[in-house]
Length: 503
Ligand code: SAH
Image 1 (tube, rainbow, N blue to C red):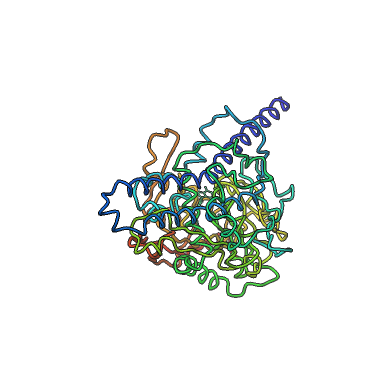
Image 2: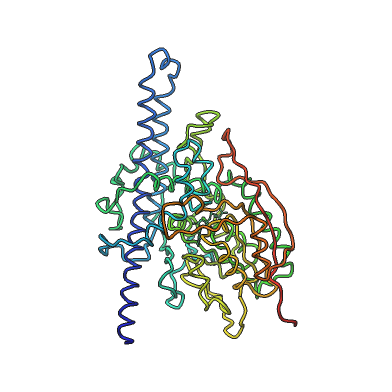
């Protein structure tokens, strides 16, 4: 009987891994498809231009050179993407044969968090309106030699088979600076199959590249905009709107935090990791949690493989001709990152946990334990264990543009309450743009879309008391120079988990 169960579990695990490999291949393919999809756009612009009557064409003599400039920017973005992929160490055996392995879970995993982008994909403004959505609606450490601040996980850290493993850094190959790239790579950093690069990774072999729908490539464009939000000087205004109030609130809530025993803070839906890093630098044991490989491949690269501030130059705004004030605006370069993560002053124990928030933190072993839960992407030597403590372990949970990613927001709130210590705080910032709203057609999908009033009622039910509440206006991955700027009136609150015991 037991043997049968073991066999069943083994089979299940194998299936899950195969699905994950398939999903990861598709995401890698989306990244690899970026140059070709972008080139296709430029060809489209050229075609329209060619259709102009000669008199009209003559009024736009600079257009052919704009197209060439767009191609140069695409090449440089592609170079960044490909270098990022080369630095990526897949946590799974990518060589396994997963063809023919079909499972609805996969579809869910791949599309679930991106539906809203799809919703907007046809609109010209998808770039700015849906940026937050596309990359999942809205992913450390002690500094080591070079800038690699991620570590491989220990076996103890690998706990749940269902979680998505993190991407472990291995020390990127030497990276030329962008000036050299511009000189040597002009227009052919990578062709549509990524052929121009030689890669040591079999899984980057063009023959394994899948044809992915354009909507997947759109997610890559969203990631590029997320890089600006988290890791560029241009994103500072947006970070000041979203992250600064959170950081100030954490600072005020934990005024006497000690270096010897820093408070622990969890950031579910950590995106590209800047907020989790800032929280670490503020003197917290900070753990980001993120389930999108799109995000994790990128955050891992920036956090672990950056050698200098401004090492990379990307062109985030080239993909939309709409609402542009000038070609120069559209083609402007953005340097990333604006800080060197390994020198930012992180607190020991910074980690990134890959996996679905519900699966990872619903695990009952989370209660009474902070063990880096699953896979610690980053060095996290100071996991503390409090086996006898029946209560949650986190002093703070910070959610920024996260709670509306839930199928069932009540479940998120319940888990947040459970994993928090008594007296711990939940700081939330964001709108209620439910990711799975309008997700019709898929029978298994559910989407509970509560009003703010109901969200608060649910939180009170799970033992929270509202301490502060405010509305803050903000953008999300918006091009600051675009003529169209979408603003959220984000809910910002601090809730405290009531104590049930008297001390
Ligand atoms: N906090 C970041 C990212 C917000 S977007 C910021 O403010 O920029 C929401 C993020 O949550 C996405 O990166 C998405 O991939 C992630 N996410 C969505 N559902 C998740 C889940 N169930 N578990 C973990 N991460 C999730």
